[in-house]
Image (cartoon, rainbow, N blue to C red; front, top):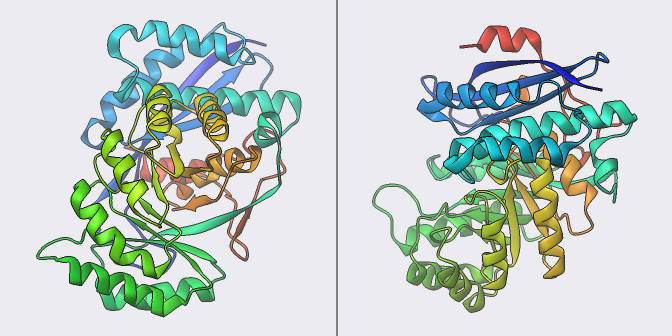
Length: 363
């Protein structure tokens, strides 16, 4: 089998919060770059990437330039193909746009491999289980009014979610008392039978993370996420050692090497990997192996349609972030049922691009 053609699009999806009908920003768009790799046997693989922001055009250029180098290659030799592309990026990697572009290609290669072998990607990666827990994300954002967040949290429970994530490090004139009040309000709305996570998005320094973190320990959070600068491994380790609440982190780093440093420093209790910044499926599962060696669970960041395969495949997969920003790209996606996602039973990723959506939202 040989790769014969490539096709990519920029797709600008609307900013929306469908899980609990949160406030939308009509002028805000999320820019995705989609990719299709075609073969001489008629099998096509799909992938996507984003985080381009205003650089979406540059990201698409990188995707196309690297994808064209795969023409004539055997798509089943994934490591060989990705190795060739990494060499082609020269000193542009291992971070930034180069890694994001590689991710789209790597994802599409795995989709082809699954279709060619009539197996799901999850099965090819280990197939540890068919269903995984999932948590609602994006419905309880820090910018939403507290009254809305309180109602939305209760609504998520009624929808069957057993896990959900909110945010602290509030915008504007905040203080520790307001931060604690928000967690208290959400916890009271859902009770203690529901797992509650909380994202800080690197907005605290180490002192704040320890001080406020200790005060929220009593609310039994499932984890505190990205509590301080993502590359302050020593600082993260101080926070993790000081709190009873587990510390999650890793979504902001690129490639696999930073995870070695993070794990060796004991910076996190839960390893969170962004599929796109990591460089795709191949790199994600390598990081999962590293985490397992340190007896740590692994979770995804975004892209639940693909990440369900990954978290389900490995024995230390914990839960899938269900933030459906990319759902409109596809005809059909896995849906949460009673707080779980089921791996699609179709070969490859089990996904098809929604051609009408790509046309409607195409740049």
